Image (cartoon, rainbow, N blue to C red; front, side, top):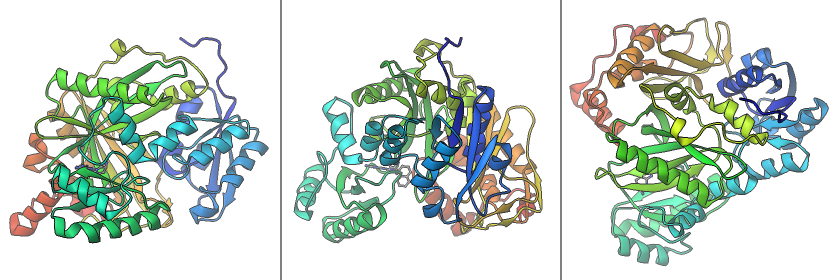
Length: 470
Ligand code: MV4
């Protein structure tokens, strides 16, 4: 039911690759014109082909193209766009960019600049959530300025602890300290790393929860303070804090009681900071099912299709409508979860060493059939540039239950043919055949355990078609 509020005439998508294609698709269904921006090595990319208009905004180096705020804003001006969608990555969590869009008279399709600023200050966000009665991991109350304060905090909560960067997130700059004797050096190394990586050396401390689960909840809020959640996603299988496999529901949330609890907590967290638009609240969940707030992500996430297929909701469309001032279209009671979804992030990387493998795709055949979705911007003949993230496709499957989703994912990985570059498809075939994954018994240490068991000669059989992904 669309009330007679105006949506946008034209949206500039300030991103590239599969997420730019994804946003163009939702814009088209809403009758919104689209503007693609691209760097001078991407004139043949799919998001440029699909957009109504496209403008080259600079050279391959993202600093001078996809991160070039003046170039993006002036492109919005000359194309007469009335809104900007930042996608994910690049400027999507840069609150200066959100402010600059608004100052230029454009709608920023995302949360408020204040939400983004706080989402980017992990120590502050943690402190606010704690004060609002949301459970956080025992640790420092805000940032720790000196090694002495860090030591005092660590002694109070007990080792192992983890040192995190306030401006970090996604585990970047995270250091686990298992014994007191290692704290001083780790603290100063973490400070230097945070300053180099984020331009901000501020750190905070938490008790390290070993063998935890990473469970996050999709939230949606309108500009009137109505907030709902779209249930959880389990993202515990990560490599160097890069999520690899995501699924919903979490195999760990076996009871509706747990799912309701983590869902209610995510809405409470959003309300605590007067959140607007869509976002994701991340939690660490202990083996005893205790739930701890971790951080809030103020953008559309790579793994959003997992939630889309189990709820039947187009999250990008809702994001655009919420940014235009529309009220939430759904009540919490209308959010139903049907079946089970799994996503594998396919990267153009060596499947053992995860080293990028850019180049020309000589032949591509995409899986399909019941319950299969592939979000991608590649095509036969496309040249994967070396300048950007190596994610080339997201393979999402939907089954009536987890068992069917696993079998469907295996079948789809076998069908997926990408020739000309190396990909991580063989890696996923291993994971989807691993007994612990099949049982749903995995946590954040799954990859270490899988690699150490394969190194001890217990290597898992690669699927028979692994050679296809050369
Ligand atoms: C933690 C944790 C355990 N204890 N914090 C990693 C990325 C970011 N989302 C937060 N992360 C974690 N924070 C405390 N206090 C476990 C993770 C974590 C993780 C850690 C190491 C290796 C893989 C991981 C996968 C998911 C979450």
